[in-house]
Length: 415
Image 1 (cartoon, one colour):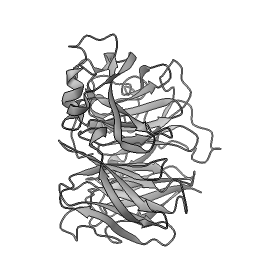
Image 2 (cartoon, helix red, strand yellow; image 1 turned 180 degrees about the vertical axis):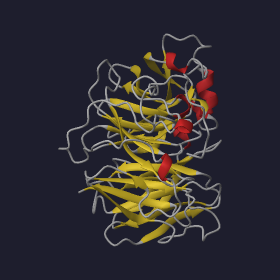
Image 3 (cartoon, rainbow, N blue to C red; image 1 turned 90 degrees about the horizontal axis):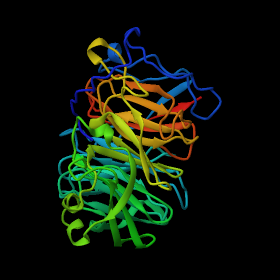
Image 4 (cartoon, rainbow, N blue to C red; image 1 turned 30 degrees about the vertical axis):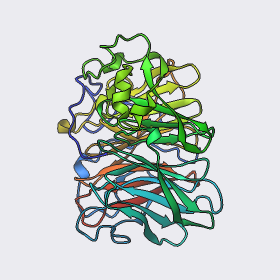
């Protein structure tokens, strides 16, 4: 993810609301591990560079630093660490103890790890040729996938020492999963991997390995909505919300995929979206955050149907920052909550965290979208939202803040 300025849709649901207030469904009952009373609005009037806690957050939650540049300064003060995505070792020995992070710098990219028991943090891999490391995912077969969010971006697989999860034994480049502007990565138990191309005009991809856990061989597919003409498949800011309905996964030319997967997708007229950035599978649904569209789409993996799950002006207000009206703007990172709800972080200022309800008024659309938190730092965005093993704790990063040496990872926990 990176700092951007995007205009919002002309639609608005905020007319008549007090400044900073949002339209939302009924408040969630405070009974589950991360249920909350929604906050009233974004942190427009609370921006400062001397904060002690980064978020405006609901009552009953505590915020605690995991590791920032005062704990581990990866680049020695020469540049922001640009801490991006988070994951823990979800399986195997000492599952949940180690938090891994990518750092999205232009070169000399790094992976770091924080021991959540001791608080110790260290760089575990760094190479001059790594550019804009972003996406990060623990696989069900016990490896780390991470990737570059840039033209010609590569996906890598890190193998860890089973006796010491802070040590990487080898790293393999997985070009078969696509040379793309990678950000979001999802890996399923059967070996399927979902990725996206973070581009206005980027597509959504599925990699099916020949053998589970072996990403060196398999087939990459791109999503294509069936009822659209070839011209309608192309990215268009004015018509993106027409991209819904039945779809198919179209096989791509693997000789082209390992050079330029976007070109391979264009060859079959795969559907193009507005900066798809993150992916998250919950149950049988793949969610994709389309930043330029101000919407999150839901992809039913059983019925092969795509719907708009959360969309500014449809089931959540449109933001009007100048008027201090809170709304949905530039969704970026996604996370599965402990009860199966979808958590959404914005690439925006003030960067907000939203939670979409599971139930729907109509097929495929969230009937409730509520505001959980808002970032106080005037120059930063939230990134890397993620739930590890503790269902009451959300990890998140504060990326490129105006507060000195504050680029790093926090956690917010329900008391």
